Length: 225
Image (tube, rainbow, N blue to C red; front, side, top):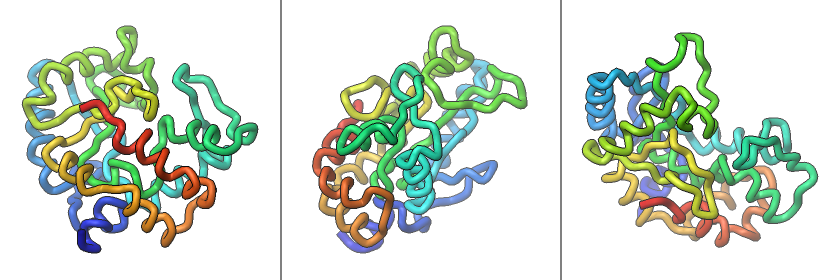
């Protein structure tokens, strides 16, 4: 694998990325399929909007630092706040990794991933929190979730975190463009991630490198296919 491929996988380049809308960016190959998905959803009264898309290594590292140090709220699967200062070792990493990927290992680096919500289901000033209750049967985005389960695959998209499998929490807001994302996942390895982190420091780096093989298995390759 060449250096360009490694840079794409780990979020160290944006050469595969184009700006889409509202300062959100996508992989060049994902733009047209995503537009088609959104247009189809509109016929059912669903207005799909992006809450998050491409993120660089540096951006993911900033999120990671804020959460691992307790400067930004960390939630458990029940939506309760976790005090990471009281945790140590792999337990501390697990608490953050439940909802936030390790820098260099986020699928958002690839530009194939979008976190979405339905703007038609909420007021214009609504700020999506990307929490499970918003996508539950009593939440505003339930109709969109149901529609995606029926139609997303027809446009090449799937939900890698549809249910909790012992790694990343269920994320009903997370869509992935399968044709490109699958290729990237096959190319990716724990060795590539280790090299990236060794060259680009992050908070709790020593602890992360100690448990990197477990992290890769539990949080990177462990997806709903």
